[in-house]
Amino acid sequence: MRLQGKTAIVTGGASGFGAGIVRKFAAEGARVLVVDINSAGAEAMAAEVNGLAFAANVADKGSVGALVDFALERMGRVDILVNNAGVTHLPKPMEEVSEDDFDRVIAVNCKSIYLFAQALLPHMKRNGSGNILNIASTAGLSPRPRLNWYNASKGWVITATKAMAVELAPAGIRVNALCPVAGETPLLASFMGEDTPEMRAKFLSTIPLGRFSTPEDMGNAACYLCSDEASMITGVAMEVDGGRCI
Image (cartoon, rainbow, N blue to C red; front, side, top):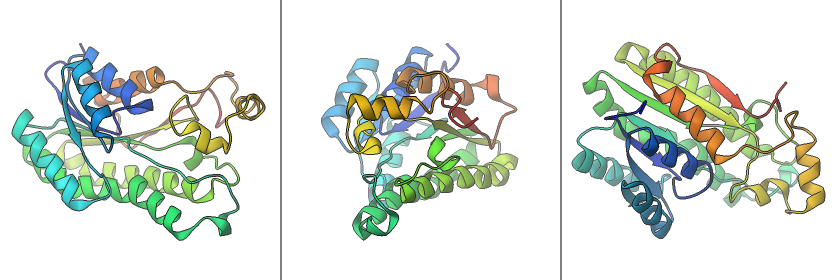
């Protein structure tokens, strides 16, 4: 029960890595607010873990503000924020990615972190404590060809994490990132372009441990970084990638 008595917001929490984090946090004693653009999915996950649900567009300032107001009203305080919601574009040459796809990737993967900082940091600063976990990617450390602007967005997340960590440390707020390799999530087919045995084998050949990241892997790593066991850790981009970035 490493998160006993803690409250947490997990965006993109209805499926994939987010669902793994939600389940682990709840199992370790946290009260979790499951946030997703998929309202039915958020409600189902919240019911599973006896948590709360909120449907939100994390790239919209009004939606994020309403979410934070709801969280503070229903939970009283927010100890942990996991910025997990993310999107990608289909693999293609960088000059062929549409402007709409580029804008969507930057809005969901990057702008959302800025919007949550605006909305939630005043509360965390008043409390003198808090944990923010941003979900980056190995793509931000060792970019794959043809996922160009997605790679760039996750590199931004890593740098933003370090900038937040150094600025917020005096306020008692820790900020870290996780860098998973591709996993069994709704985004896997988009990363690969097509979900075929041949494409999976190609991806797996680049991972020394020979398997994809799982939601459970992410939940375990996230729980550690957001627990008091990691009280001396801030500004790290932890690779959960089976050796992909070696």
